[in-house]
Image 1 (cartoon, rainbow, N blue to C red):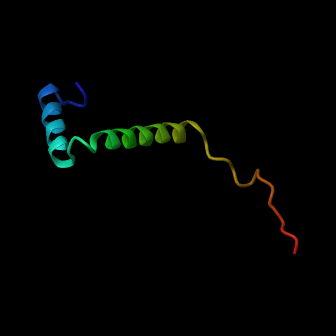
Image 2: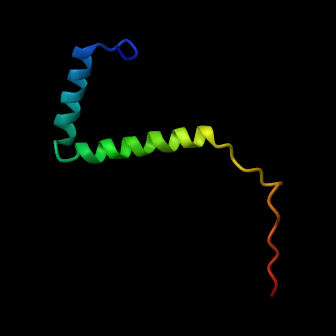
Image 3: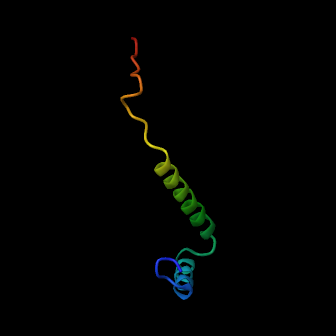
Length: 61
């Protein structure tokens, strides 16, 4: 059970998604969703680098 949703509710949601997007688009949607979750997990694990720690680049003319 996911967040209070049972199996009948999940099946109804999947059928609605299948009707809206069609069977051909489902693999693309799944791949995009998987990449999004992967990027989100990576972003939450890796802290952003501090800008103060990086040396500034000085361009010479």
